[in-house]
Length: 72
Image (cartoon, rainbow, N blue to C red; front, side, top):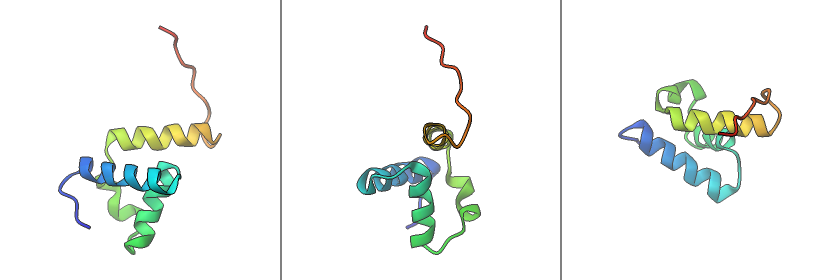
């Protein structure tokens, strides 16, 4: 599947994550595996929103240090 922009790729990854009940990072890796791509091949398709979701998933899985959340 060819994507016109990073937003359409992000939506596709979101669908994969929801459908298979997996993290966004796992969905990206599944997409790469299914399409015989290396993660480096799709790095330009990962927008800020998707990157933030991946980072949040990794924080929840304790793969990254937690950040303080301000209660405003």
